[in-house]
Length: 210
Image 1 (cartoon, rainbow, N blue to C red):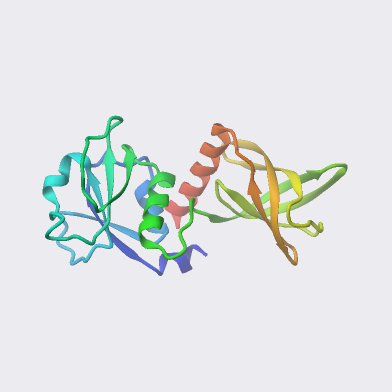
Image 2: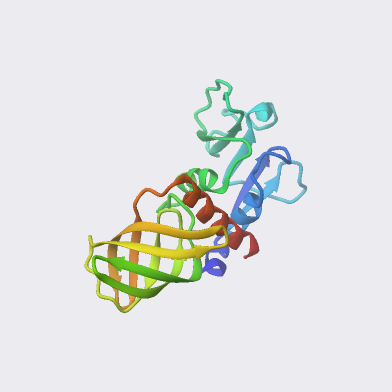
């Protein structure tokens, strides 16, 4: 899945400093098919989007010179007031994958996702009422996962899913979205911040290694 997604590539021009991104964020975006090219690169480019540190707006073409290319602004904790119709959103530095991904998807993709998803092979234990069974998480994002199991589950059913990530054991309450043969799509109910961070770290690491 990662190889297929990476074959559909977008060029993103970066007017940012070395500390503008959280660790491995740039590599993870590359794994998703977004090529982040420094603004001073000699490589030919026609950017689909620009990532711009709010302190470097004087280095990019004006709205009259380039009215169409969308911009994601990387800001401090107190963003500068700036009126530019090309700005599609702001992310506080150092920018993490999830926040950047959502805005890039909304700006560029026909069917945008809110959070990135990666393939996995994680042993899982499931509980629903007095029923218990083993399964496998075969893909995962902060929003949910795809579960491989033989247990029949109707859409809308609730269950608990437990699986291990490098950061520790995850316990998630989930709702069944669909089941196709032995694959069940699950949406997580709101997760604790620590669980969101653990999944984000796992996803970012898998993408950065792709």
